[in-house]
Image (tube, rainbow, N blue to C red; front, side, top):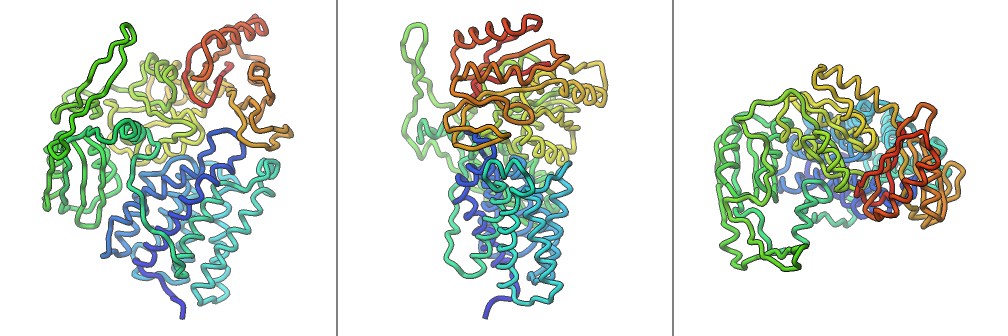
Length: 576
């Protein structure tokens, strides 16, 4: 006889199975990207979002109950949310858990209401919901649940199986709702990701054998974790933070999401290898740091401590480590000793509490040595390393906000796939005003910060910057990773492509020709300036030759050429 209700233990198993199923399919989902560019990341974003929650669920252990499970799922996915698809998935989970957190077991009526609440929450998070996306697939599942419940279905196995089958059908119809999907010959990638989560969860409910083991969190490709994973790859023996510190906080009052995010952000500012799992009354903490006292002092603000344990990892690991760096002038090598326990390897902590906050600060999402240098020269306080292939999470953005010592912080996402995560961070920021300037490209971000006027109010600056970025049109030159047809343009794997703000501008076998055609596609009647940022795979002489060609074609324009150093995109260009 099949189960007719779901308890917390079963739901935990279903959630982990859904997360693992998505993880297994992430590369395939990445390839469903409409544009055949080498940065399709929907599967990666959704996987990193749900795995952030899965690790918190896994850490709850055997004594799991519905409130703690819901908190782990909602809080973990909220912190880990990255990319539009990841943010929407986190909102679906947030809405679902909001409805079930006070239930001991889930029945068909409760699940039906929870599905409906999930869809309602996710739609509210998106300013202009578009049909034919993950939202449509989610709503299709919720509508099917309601239909079955109204028909009086009582068999939970049949109920869940029918919902998954219907979401697959809705997914198959997404190309009919979005012509761009139909022309590219793919279904919506975010919708596919959601179907894989649901399918894995139902498999677990049906008793199928599933692998629920989770790989340790290595930071993924987030800005905070990318450097750590790179250092680990260079030498697994290197110990950046010397003391393994563990303890339990017996809370004075329950953690809200903001307090939990703030505490985790603080831990990330003083160390790495962080595990922070909050229950109703306690918080389990693990951190590698060079100053355990800082972690302990911060934790005491929330309650009493127990089960304290501190190990000196450097004493346990006697191997002396040196990092060799080449001297460009003489060719000699010098050894750099690993940082001492009281000397952190990098200054990552937030602003000194003695410094009075300034009125305004800036955060920009950027990638490429040259692009980062440009933003810093324009007065940006903090750079989040990220972009097409490294969408920062909500937690990454909150950590950056904490490091900027200003009353009002403007953030420039510089990518349409990061705006939702920035908006989510703004909702969670309490002590400062975080204003999101919805820049969709790096040139828009540069224009926004150039037009900032310190003498104006925050609202006036926000309105002015948003107005100015509307006059910037952007083109990007990259290459195709598969054959497809978009905007009636036939694209072959290996072709160069020029992509504009609203679609494909040029396709061809020669990069220079495609780049020139891309410039022609972004130039408007009112434009006076063409800016060219060349990437890491373009030489300076080649870029200068291209600049001269553009100058000959547009003699009345000011032409600027700068090194961007961005990967994947040979040129990023703008006209304004």
